[in-house]
Image (cartoon, rainbow, N blue to C red; front, top):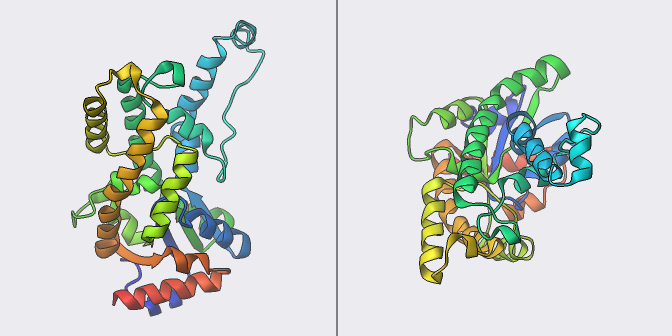
Amino acid sequence: MTYETAQDWQDAKGKHALLFGMSGLGKTYLSNMLRDEGAWFHYSVDYRIGTRYMGEYIADNFKREAMKNPFLRELLLTDSVYIASNITFENLAPLSTYLGKPGDPAKGGLPFSEYMERQRQHRDAEIAALKDTVRFIDRARALYGYEDFVCDSGGSICEVVDPDDPDDELLSLLSRNLLLVWIEGSEAHTEELIRRFSRAPKPMYYQPRFLEACWDEYLSTRKLKEHEVDPDDFIRLTYARALAHRQPRYAAMAERWGVKVSADDVAQVRSPADFSALISRALEARS
Protein backbone atom coordinates (compact mmCIF):
# COMPACT_ATOMS: atom_id res chain seq x y z
CA MET A 1 0.00 0.00 0.00
CA THR A 2 1.25 3.44 -0.89
CA TYR A 3 0.04 4.81 2.50
CA GLU A 4 0.56 2.38 5.38
CA THR A 5 -0.61 4.65 8.19
CA ALA A 6 -2.86 7.63 8.80
CA GLN A 7 0.27 9.71 9.34
CA ASP A 8 1.60 8.69 5.92
CA TRP A 9 -1.66 9.91 4.40
CA GLN A 10 -1.71 13.17 6.34
CA ASP A 11 1.94 13.97 5.56
CA ALA A 12 1.78 13.11 1.85
CA LYS A 13 2.51 15.97 -0.51
CA GLY A 14 0.12 14.37 -2.99
CA LYS A 15 -2.84 12.26 -1.87
CA HIS A 16 -3.87 9.60 -4.39
CA ALA A 17 -7.02 7.55 -3.86
CA LEU A 18 -8.94 5.05 -5.97
CA LEU A 19 -12.59 4.64 -4.99
CA PHE A 20 -14.31 1.32 -5.69
CA GLY A 21 -17.62 -0.36 -4.92
CA MET A 22 -21.07 -0.69 -6.43
CA SER A 23 -22.42 2.21 -8.47
CA GLY A 24 -24.72 4.45 -6.47
CA LEU A 25 -22.85 4.43 -3.14
CA GLY A 26 -20.88 7.66 -3.50
CA LYS A 27 -17.81 7.20 -5.71
CA THR A 28 -18.80 9.87 -8.21
CA TYR A 29 -20.24 12.12 -5.49
CA LEU A 30 -16.90 12.16 -3.66
CA SER A 31 -14.91 12.58 -6.87
CA ASN A 32 -17.02 15.54 -8.02
CA MET A 33 -16.87 17.15 -4.60
CA LEU A 34 -13.07 16.82 -4.39
CA ARG A 35 -12.70 18.28 -7.87
CA ASP A 36 -15.11 21.16 -7.29
CA GLU A 37 -14.20 22.04 -3.69
CA GLY A 38 -10.48 21.34 -3.67
CA ALA A 39 -7.41 21.01 -5.85
CA TRP A 40 -8.03 17.36 -6.83
CA PHE A 41 -7.74 15.89 -10.30
CA HIS A 42 -10.74 13.65 -11.09
CA TYR A 43 -10.01 10.63 -13.27
CA SER A 44 -13.10 8.63 -14.29
CA VAL A 45 -12.39 5.09 -15.47
CA ASP A 46 -15.79 4.77 -17.15
CA TYR A 47 -15.30 8.07 -18.99
CA ARG A 48 -11.88 6.92 -20.16
CA ILE A 49 -13.38 3.63 -21.37
CA GLY A 50 -16.17 5.40 -23.24
CA THR A 51 -13.95 7.98 -24.93
CA ARG A 52 -10.50 6.48 -25.43
CA TYR A 53 -11.11 2.74 -25.71
CA MET A 54 -14.71 2.20 -26.80
CA GLY A 55 -15.56 5.52 -28.43
CA GLU A 56 -15.29 4.10 -31.93
CA TYR A 57 -17.46 1.10 -31.10
CA ILE A 58 -20.08 3.41 -29.61
CA ALA A 59 -20.08 5.81 -32.57
CA ASP A 60 -20.26 2.94 -35.08
CA ASN A 61 -23.26 1.57 -33.22
CA PHE A 62 -25.03 4.93 -33.60
CA LYS A 63 -24.14 4.99 -37.29
CA ARG A 64 -25.39 1.43 -37.79
CA GLU A 65 -28.80 2.48 -36.50
CA ALA A 66 -28.75 5.70 -38.54
CA MET A 67 -27.99 3.76 -41.73
CA LYS A 68 -31.39 2.05 -41.38
CA ASN A 69 -33.03 5.42 -42.04
CA PRO A 70 -32.90 6.31 -45.77
CA PHE A 71 -32.65 10.04 -45.06
CA LEU A 72 -29.77 9.69 -42.62
CA ARG A 73 -28.12 6.98 -44.71
CA GLU A 74 -27.70 9.36 -47.65
CA LEU A 75 -26.28 12.06 -45.40
CA LEU A 76 -23.81 9.66 -43.81
CA LEU A 77 -22.65 8.26 -47.14
CA THR A 78 -21.90 11.76 -48.39
CA ASP A 79 -20.23 12.84 -45.11
CA SER A 80 -22.92 15.47 -44.67
CA VAL A 81 -23.55 14.75 -40.99
CA TYR A 82 -21.33 13.84 -38.08
CA ILE A 83 -22.47 11.35 -35.44
CA ALA A 84 -20.57 11.10 -32.15
CA SER A 85 -21.11 10.22 -28.52
CA ASN A 86 -21.62 13.02 -26.00
CA ILE A 87 -20.46 11.00 -23.02
CA THR A 88 -19.69 12.89 -19.78
CA PHE A 89 -18.65 12.03 -16.22
CA GLU A 90 -22.31 12.30 -15.18
CA ASN A 91 -23.87 10.73 -18.29
CA LEU A 92 -22.40 7.38 -19.29
CA ALA A 93 -25.52 6.27 -21.16
CA PRO A 94 -23.71 5.93 -24.54
CA LEU A 95 -21.40 3.32 -23.01
CA SER A 96 -24.12 1.29 -21.29
CA THR A 97 -26.34 1.51 -24.39
CA TYR A 98 -23.57 0.03 -26.49
CA LEU A 99 -23.04 -2.85 -24.05
CA GLY A 100 -26.69 -3.70 -24.52
CA LYS A 101 -28.81 -6.56 -23.22
CA PRO A 102 -29.24 -10.08 -24.59
CA GLY A 103 -32.55 -11.44 -25.77
CA ASP A 104 -35.54 -10.66 -27.97
CA PRO A 105 -34.47 -8.28 -30.79
CA ALA A 106 -38.00 -6.87 -30.90
CA LYS A 107 -37.36 -5.58 -27.37
CA GLY A 108 -33.92 -4.25 -28.17
CA GLY A 109 -32.06 -7.43 -27.28
CA LEU A 110 -28.81 -8.64 -28.80
CA PRO A 111 -27.79 -12.17 -29.82
CA PHE A 112 -25.96 -13.62 -26.82
CA SER A 113 -22.76 -14.10 -28.82
CA GLU A 114 -22.73 -10.40 -29.81
CA TYR A 115 -23.52 -9.42 -26.23
CA MET A 116 -20.56 -11.45 -24.96
CA GLU A 117 -18.25 -9.91 -27.56
CA ARG A 118 -19.19 -6.43 -26.33
CA GLN A 119 -18.57 -7.61 -22.78
CA ARG A 120 -15.08 -8.76 -23.85
CA GLN A 121 -14.42 -5.39 -25.43
CA HIS A 122 -15.39 -3.69 -22.17
CA ARG A 123 -13.11 -5.95 -20.12
CA ASP A 124 -10.11 -5.11 -22.32
CA ALA A 125 -11.00 -1.41 -22.18
CA GLU A 126 -11.45 -1.39 -18.41
CA ILE A 127 -8.07 -3.02 -17.80
CA ALA A 128 -6.40 -0.52 -20.13
CA ALA A 129 -8.17 2.44 -18.50
CA LEU A 130 -7.16 1.28 -15.02
CA LYS A 131 -3.55 0.95 -16.12
CA ASP A 132 -3.76 4.49 -17.50
CA THR A 133 -4.50 5.75 -13.97
CA VAL A 134 -0.81 5.83 -13.07
CA ARG A 135 0.09 7.81 -16.19
CA PHE A 136 -2.69 10.29 -15.45
CA ILE A 137 -1.31 10.89 -11.95
CA ASP A 138 1.92 12.08 -13.57
CA ARG A 139 0.03 13.89 -16.33
CA ALA A 140 -2.19 15.77 -13.86
CA ARG A 141 0.89 16.94 -11.96
CA ALA A 142 3.06 17.80 -14.97
CA LEU A 143 0.41 19.53 -17.09
CA TYR A 144 -1.96 21.08 -14.57
CA GLY A 145 -0.09 21.18 -11.28
CA TYR A 146 -2.44 18.82 -9.41
CA GLU A 147 -0.81 16.92 -6.54
CA ASP A 148 -4.01 15.32 -5.22
CA PHE A 149 -5.68 12.72 -7.44
CA VAL A 150 -8.88 10.70 -7.17
CA CYS A 151 -9.75 7.79 -9.44
CA ASP A 152 -13.48 7.09 -9.77
CA SER A 153 -13.41 3.43 -10.78
CA GLY A 154 -16.25 1.42 -12.30
CA GLY A 155 -18.32 -0.97 -10.25
CA SER A 156 -16.88 -3.85 -12.25
CA ILE A 157 -13.25 -3.36 -11.18
CA CYS A 158 -13.53 -6.47 -9.00
CA GLU A 159 -14.39 -8.52 -12.09
CA VAL A 160 -11.15 -7.76 -13.96
CA VAL A 161 -8.71 -8.52 -11.12
CA ASP A 162 -8.03 -11.45 -8.79
CA PRO A 163 -8.26 -9.97 -5.27
CA ASP A 164 -6.94 -13.17 -3.67
CA ASP A 165 -3.76 -13.26 -5.75
CA PRO A 166 -0.99 -11.40 -3.89
CA ASP A 167 0.80 -10.98 -7.22
CA ASP A 168 -2.17 -9.68 -9.23
CA GLU A 169 -0.53 -7.40 -11.77
CA LEU A 170 -3.19 -4.72 -11.91
CA LEU A 171 -3.85 -4.48 -8.18
CA SER A 172 -0.11 -4.42 -7.50
CA LEU A 173 0.31 -1.51 -9.92
CA LEU A 174 -2.61 0.44 -8.53
CA SER A 175 -1.80 -0.11 -4.84
CA ARG A 176 1.77 1.12 -5.35
CA ASN A 177 0.43 4.44 -6.59
CA LEU A 178 -2.97 4.98 -4.96
CA LEU A 179 -4.82 4.05 -1.81
CA LEU A 180 -7.64 1.68 -2.77
CA VAL A 181 -10.81 2.66 -0.88
CA TRP A 182 -13.87 0.42 -0.80
CA ILE A 183 -17.19 2.17 -0.20
CA GLU A 184 -19.13 -0.55 1.57
CA GLY A 185 -22.92 -0.52 1.52
CA SER A 186 -25.33 -1.97 4.05
CA GLU A 187 -28.20 -4.39 3.42
CA ALA A 188 -30.50 -1.38 3.20
CA HIS A 189 -28.27 0.14 0.52
CA THR A 190 -28.33 -3.13 -1.42
CA GLU A 191 -32.13 -3.26 -1.33
CA GLU A 192 -32.32 0.35 -2.54
CA LEU A 193 -29.84 -0.30 -5.36
CA ILE A 194 -31.94 -3.26 -6.52
CA ARG A 195 -35.15 -1.18 -6.38
CA ARG A 196 -33.47 1.61 -8.34
CA PHE A 197 -32.11 -0.78 -10.93
CA SER A 198 -35.47 -2.53 -11.30
CA ARG A 199 -37.09 0.79 -12.18
CA ALA A 200 -34.50 1.57 -14.85
CA PRO A 201 -32.34 -1.47 -15.69
CA LYS A 202 -29.11 -0.57 -17.48
CA PRO A 203 -26.44 -2.71 -19.12
CA MET A 204 -23.29 -3.48 -17.13
CA TYR A 205 -20.12 -5.52 -17.39
CA TYR A 206 -19.99 -8.92 -15.68
CA GLN A 207 -17.36 -11.63 -15.34
CA PRO A 208 -17.81 -14.07 -18.27
CA ARG A 209 -18.21 -17.26 -16.20
CA PHE A 210 -20.73 -15.59 -13.92
CA LEU A 211 -22.69 -14.19 -16.86
CA GLU A 212 -22.74 -17.45 -18.80
CA ALA A 213 -23.97 -19.33 -15.71
CA CYS A 214 -26.77 -16.79 -15.21
CA TRP A 215 -27.77 -17.04 -18.88
CA ASP A 216 -27.82 -20.84 -18.98
CA GLU A 217 -29.84 -21.01 -15.78
CA TYR A 218 -32.31 -18.40 -17.02
CA LEU A 219 -32.95 -20.25 -20.29
CA SER A 220 -33.22 -23.60 -18.53
CA THR A 221 -35.56 -22.63 -15.70
CA ARG A 222 -37.88 -20.63 -17.96
CA LYS A 223 -37.78 -23.06 -20.89
CA LEU A 224 -36.97 -20.23 -23.30
CA LYS A 225 -35.01 -19.87 -26.51
CA GLU A 226 -32.48 -17.06 -26.80
CA HIS A 227 -34.72 -14.86 -28.96
CA GLU A 228 -37.62 -15.23 -26.48
CA VAL A 229 -35.80 -13.69 -23.52
CA ASP A 230 -37.06 -10.37 -22.16
CA PRO A 231 -33.78 -8.39 -21.99
CA ASP A 232 -34.83 -6.24 -19.04
CA ASP A 233 -36.07 -9.21 -17.03
CA PHE A 234 -32.79 -11.03 -17.52
CA ILE A 235 -30.56 -8.16 -16.48
CA ARG A 236 -32.74 -7.35 -13.46
CA LEU A 237 -32.18 -10.86 -12.11
CA THR A 238 -28.51 -10.79 -13.09
CA TYR A 239 -27.94 -7.49 -11.30
CA ALA A 240 -29.38 -8.79 -8.03
CA ARG A 241 -27.09 -11.81 -8.23
CA ALA A 242 -24.13 -9.62 -9.17
CA LEU A 243 -24.40 -7.68 -5.91
CA ALA A 244 -23.94 -10.89 -3.93
CA HIS A 245 -21.21 -12.07 -6.32
CA ARG A 246 -19.20 -8.86 -6.05
CA GLN A 247 -19.42 -8.27 -2.30
CA PRO A 248 -16.76 -10.83 -1.26
CA ARG A 249 -14.52 -9.71 -4.11
CA TYR A 250 -14.70 -6.09 -2.95
CA ALA A 251 -14.05 -7.22 0.63
CA ALA A 252 -10.97 -9.18 -0.44
CA MET A 253 -9.64 -6.16 -2.34
CA ALA A 254 -10.01 -3.98 0.76
CA GLU A 255 -8.55 -6.62 3.07
CA ARG A 256 -5.42 -7.26 1.04
CA TRP A 257 -4.94 -4.10 -0.98
CA GLY A 258 -6.61 -1.13 0.74
CA VAL A 259 -9.15 0.15 3.25
CA LYS A 260 -12.91 0.35 3.58
CA VAL A 261 -15.33 3.11 4.53
CA SER A 262 -19.08 2.91 4.92
CA ALA A 263 -21.50 4.46 2.45
CA ASP A 264 -23.26 6.14 5.39
CA ASP A 265 -20.02 7.86 6.41
CA VAL A 266 -19.37 8.88 2.80
CA ALA A 267 -22.78 10.56 2.70
CA GLN A 268 -21.65 12.83 5.56
CA VAL A 269 -18.53 14.06 3.74
CA ARG A 270 -18.89 17.68 2.67
CA SER A 271 -15.34 18.85 2.01
CA PRO A 272 -11.85 17.64 1.07
CA ALA A 273 -10.92 17.96 4.75
CA ASP A 274 -13.81 15.65 5.69
CA PHE A 275 -12.63 13.16 3.08
CA SER A 276 -9.05 13.27 4.31
CA ALA A 277 -10.23 12.69 7.88
CA LEU A 278 -12.40 9.76 6.75
CA ILE A 279 -9.41 8.12 5.06
CA SER A 280 -7.23 8.70 8.12
CA ARG A 281 -9.78 6.91 10.30
CA ALA A 282 -9.93 4.03 7.83
CA LEU A 283 -6.15 3.65 7.90
CA GLU A 284 -6.14 3.76 11.69
CA ALA A 285 -8.83 1.07 11.81
CA ARG A 286 -6.79 -1.10 9.45
CA SER A 287 -3.65 -0.82 11.54
